[in-house]
Length: 287
Image 1 (cartoon, rainbow, N blue to C red):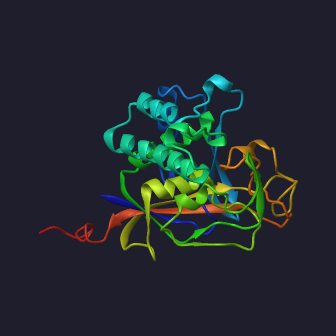
Image 2: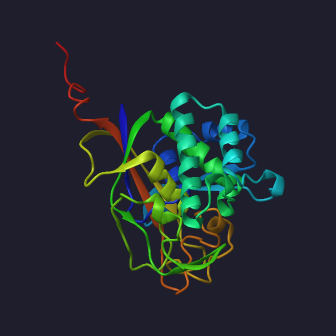
């Protein structure tokens, strides 16, 4: 059994999560095959990059050009897409859990029954593609358990479909109940709904890195927008392709916020290994 531990000092988005898993060894072709099998109109683009002077992988899930018929705006539609992917049992359960986490959080925030939830940004094809790709990447790496460090949320305010809100946006709060979190001097949305759902559905908090035989590691990157010194909030990146594909709330790029403070490159690191109680005999001569 392998464990994956997430270092969320820069928060977590679905693309940061996918980039880290790809950098750790998950095959992009396998992730794209699952998305295509489900009939979801989205493309996974993974690019090796250098962010903050270290190697990483930046992932964008691109659904540009989709029309209203491609949207999956209800729980039933999202669950149907997961069923259509014909995932192996563990991945299938995880994907449905992710959908449930998102939909139940939306229902809690808006005070409506789950069946009445209408997803806006989270109903785009890329939202389901992220879910399918993420659970498939865990299968590729044979990860049984996921843990996370303290989760950085960010700061400032953001504009989403329902208006202007402080960071974190409302739907993140029910998703991260029970997780240790902190704010940040950076006035930007560091943890998005899609990233928070990964933690809510798949991970448990850990006060420190679990004892493991480290076998793989990966870094997902979200780089500062081109043409800015360190990545500017509010003006520089809103509406760019990398920005609109990166988070959960509309208009968040490599971290856009309302105040214009520098953001810079962001990284999510994943450590993958075998718990030490199971790895005791690895690397030792056998009698």
